[in-house]
Length: 466
Image (cartoon, rainbow, N blue to C red; front, side, top):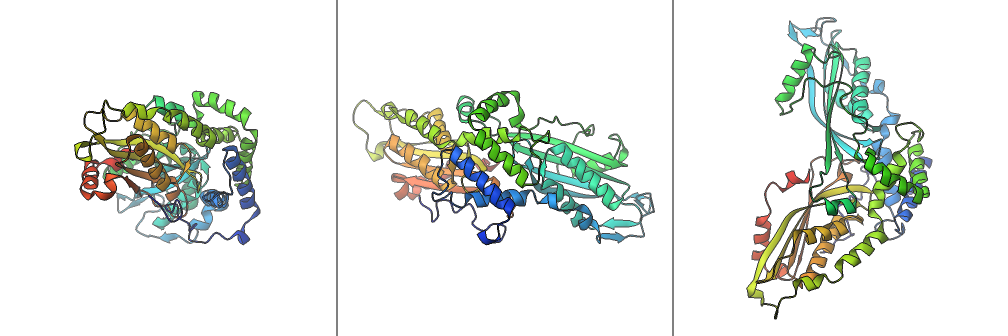
């Protein structure tokens, strides 16, 4: 399988604009220089095709994803407060009926302040009007986005949205609930040992002010009741301190031990990440950010180029012996189709240094009388190619070619993936999914074989990606 640009799935248009080096600001240049240090630390050549524009892409994505530092809530809310005389002054009721207003299912993203990886969130925000005025509904979303576009943790994000809206529109009360999803990226050693690795950490946080200030207030019953219409069930006993500050997987004690070893071996990379934090307007010495550079480097080193190539070469040695039968290889008509479906993978987009993840489906023909390839063997191939700087097209092709080299051809690979770069940059296409196919041998000339394999892939595959 080929592509025009070895990775055209990563969009060349950055936030609707061409990459114009003449317009670069000092902060952008500083981030570019830091990214070059990180790429060198991975054993990569940042001048090779596929990586030449990566430093600029990363800089633009990070600055876009943290633009909230330069935005002010009052600039958004001012001019968007409208008189509504039917609301009783100071009571928040309309004609004796509760005047609660809720905007549900706001899809946002933010950058985790502990590891610099983007995390997804679904925001539900509501308020009870007072003072005979209401706010334009779009402003609730825009205010939430201001604070999401900063380095955050879930609870502080909920509190800041709640506080800003309360002070900006002066309602009887504000309620915020966030459903947050943080990718739990394994390292290559642990994922080979644990095939049931949980790829996500999910948390739910809330914050309230005014009539929502008491977690047992009746106003929360109305708020949560309206959420149930959308299938959102929330424990009413949620508190402002319901989430531990170490919700990020990179903050676990086991990861910290690994992190300290990597920090000692890669001081230039750690310093480069600290430089990125400064360029974004943050203080690397802020207590919540002190460990962030080492956490990010530990994660990034999963994709070290030379290390993974060495392991792959050792893995491939002697593998073909596993498939040698007693006698001659059977003819094409005496082969059976086998498949392994829903093999999870994690990888790193080389264009934006952002994760992409999903499932791999592998189909192949094998002579009758020979045991088909074990799932663990195919899973190992998937992970060896996944844990490096990649594009999905190349990953699909490499898996197919490696399996084909073992079996002698007749291989089909389908990769389904979610790309973080599709949600954490200007395009922000939540829920999008990308599929790629590679076919070799018999699959390339036999439409019936391709159709048979595709039909074997379960319909609910996309639900298994999350």
